[in-house]
Length: 540
Image 1 (tube, rainbow, N blue to C red):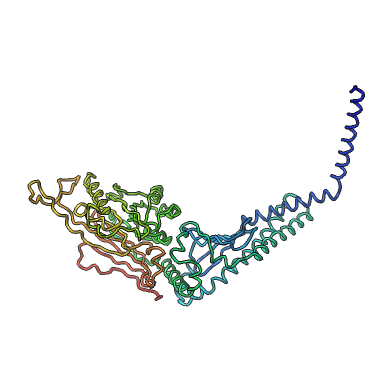
Image 2 (cartoon, rainbow, N blue to C red):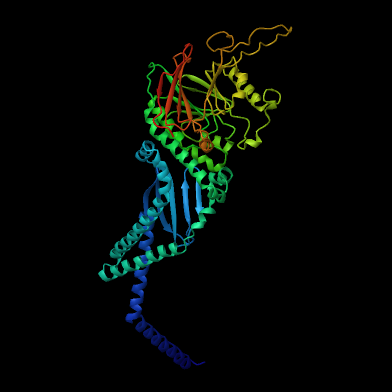
């Protein structure tokens, strides 16, 4: 191809390109194309405003009986409803299709409303009857709020970008259409029967095993409603009676230890413990185990309330607590985990060991036939290991902590006080004196001496075993009974010589009555009658 021919072809291509560019420019500048671009921009800004406003401000608080629930909606492709019940987990319902997701958080009790329920016994029944209406009105109010927030957010966002009244108005109308369409789609695809087939997460995966399947609950609604009223009534009384705990001021040099046990995931326990710590000026809290129910990783979040107690928290593992739970407790900044070890708090030396058995399922509990055989009982073997640690500590141990009282007998004569739990009821007793160790000639060599860093070996001390009740009221199981398990904890008073001088047994609830009782027990006193008692305020 010659040069002139090549130049002619290049000139032809250039002319076609210029013609195409000119045509494209005319189309680009056409008013309909411009309007389409503006409409697309308005639509995007409107949807962006709806999404931002919904995520930030579409939430509302509603009252359901004594509970205060927070409801919120957020953009979602799949839709559905999530009900959070801290710290137990959440329920997920396939209640409707997208593009919005409803979330309900049940996290707190309202103090004034719980007091009103107690003052009016019939209010509990009416609260159950009105619960569905309360939730329905809450959803409607949340929908109206989300609608207004969506339109307002779109107007503000478009005003900042366009600065044109017509375009701002168009964005507002578009946002209204989008929000109304989303709410309408959710309402149109509503599936009320989805509540019978929830998906559980967290600890609530065990809910069907505890309360039965949803269909059986529906068939026996009346009986379950009565149980629910008992649960609400007792938890409400707990919140209203904590403030009436009696106050006692011992001597200024007294060390106060709060003994708790068997919290079993009851979220109310933390508020009770904090109140007693502040009211009685507690120096440390000792927990003899069974903080949770199943020992699962989902339960580790329950221990995050330990730092809020504000004082040292000494803990030994229970048979419901796994190694993961023990590790989670150890990560809390004010917690001390004892597992065949000792610690010192305010001059008191405390030794403790975790329960050797992990049996959250009662069907897996070993037979009790071997409980008294040191050769086969893991409980006695653990008690022996702790006793050996006490002997080798080099200084007197003031308190020993175990979970199961069956672990305490090897500690008799070594420590003056053994604290335990596990039984879910209060027991105080003196352990039998240890049998004398035989000498090499076979004759009795007398009692085994107890090492004392401040002097020569001493004869065995008298050992008092104090078994605490359940500070969590046995958890959810304790509230299922006609007579709910009371919440129990004790304040121990030690003098400057680290000797136990008195203890206060505090009990909340019990037998379906709204009461708080405190009994003062003075060591060595002949009459340990209750020093102060707060009487029942209303029968259930």
